[in-house]
Length: 373
Image (cartoon, rainbow, N blue to C red):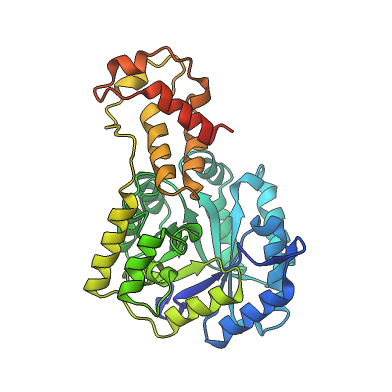
């Protein structure tokens, strides 16, 4: 069954970064946020087994399913690979989710955080795609997809092998469009070419595109003084064809109102807007980076099997976006099969063969300080 994208709201309510009070989710504020969101006619709520330590799914029951008719909203949640260690675990997790949310069924169900390596391998090992199809036949899942953090090559492979995929959720924002780790642009183009609906996560890159350096914010304010900095990031992804729903992990009522102001009367980017964003990105990325050309001469002779160029790629992303956790995830995945930066013995083999004459030992120590703490 193809998703009718005309019936999906442009703004989705992400339940990952909910407001807290005294160490617990602020139920009363969440209810006000939910009410204001639903009053606009938008109705897509996104949660997951692990958000807020499981309490996010519980708040779905308290703030949504017990307060509104079931047909008035849609719920998306996810199966976590790291909780599945047997065939029985699939149903165990799913039944917990049904109980927590009180949803009865899930409008959208995702395999969570599919990526190269252990997560994707687990979903295949435990036949999770076919298991989910059986849930769909039983009416417990309406639409099946997955959230994705892997390479473009793996995405193509999955879509070729699993034509039952109805949608894919990817990290997509203007800062990550050409990011060599996230590869937002490449992933989006694959989905667009195949006419697969795209659900967007991290449109403001975990808040980093809503709280920018003053000189970057000034560039936006000079063009549209009445619009928030975050609205530029939301309009960027909202202007892309094939993007059905954009998730925002809203943490307070002010963020709800700002996002609703952007999407109730949505205004696609103009050519002038696009030029401003390009200028902001250029200035944002104009930060000193490790000038590694990825020739990989240093890799073969490393006695500790450290994938030095890939470590530097993670470092460069962290230099540009200090609050971004993706470089850490990438580094941990990389070092699951290669050496960690902390294992460097300072032998100098890498520096002797580096065409760019980089101070690799010093830079690897920087990487270790960032990622091996």
